[in-house]
Length: 292
Image (cartoon, rainbow, N blue to C red):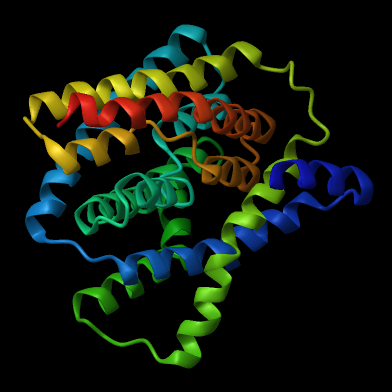
């Protein structure tokens, strides 16, 4: 519904898309990054176990996406967006409520999910930015640019406050949390605006390939890794469900910010989000059967 409203409003008022990009990058996303890291509660053992799974999954998905991009001879900007659409998943705004619903507020399951969210935030605003912008600015300039972004400082600040158990004053917490809570609405609205004027027949094969890998192949890889690590119970269930999430809306925000095939990126977010209502439901249903 929010994506649909974005389509309608953009066709009515013809928004300036760069404004959306700046608001997401310098207002909403930094606040969300700080809040998620500040609130995370995990143990060292759980952090190491889940982190190991996520790193292995990331390496496999990244390698697969680069191989396919090479076979299809995609351009450098398309390769960057194609890779991001596969390795970046929406484990924040979709993953957290799904986890809460499936596991009925189970603290262990939510701890697993928060480690996944932390990993996603880190990968998005390190690898995601480097991957997206390196094709146009070069790796060294991209690294310097990342270190100057508000997301980086919010990540460090949130981690510091978390590790040292520092209490955030109410006059800071209230506005920052309010901004973070508006992230999902703004992000989905901007995705709708992005696809309002595009031809959905463009890059159809690439969109479907990315969607297939994100929704089908990624859970298969997740199942294999969970089996190899001999994980069971809630931890295995939560990780497998997390591996089946649709493409992150941040991949579309990055593509828009750096002008790397933003129409393609928006299409993948839309298609995977819609199709995940089917694929994710099947994964959730089978999780308890496969990992009792």
